[in-house]
Length: 106
Image: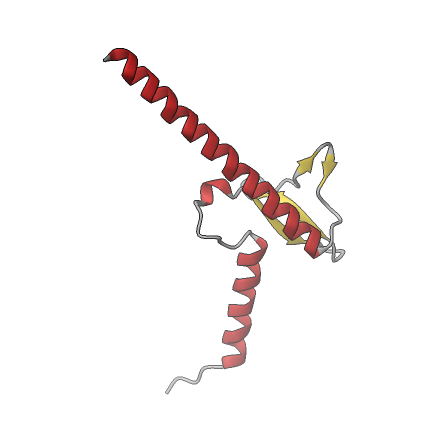
C-alpha cells in the first residue's frame, strides 16, 4: 500500500508553479518571443533577467535589479511583448519582400 503525503505533493506543485510564473509563465504565444523572466533575489527584491544567459536585463543603461514583484512582472511582460512585436514586424517585412521579389520575377 502506498501512502502519499498530499502536503509534500502540494508543496512540490506550488514550487513548480512559482518557478513557471517567475520564468514568464505562458500567454499562449510562441515562446521564441519570451526571452525575459523574473526572479526573486536573496535580499527579497526582484530582477528581470534574460532566460538564456541569466544576465539581468538592461533597459536604457539601467540594470533591472532591486525591483518590487509588481515592477518586475510589468517590466518582464513589457520586454516580452516588445520582442513579440519586433518579431512580427520582421516576419511581415520578409513576407512583403518575398511577395515583391515573386511579383518582379513574374
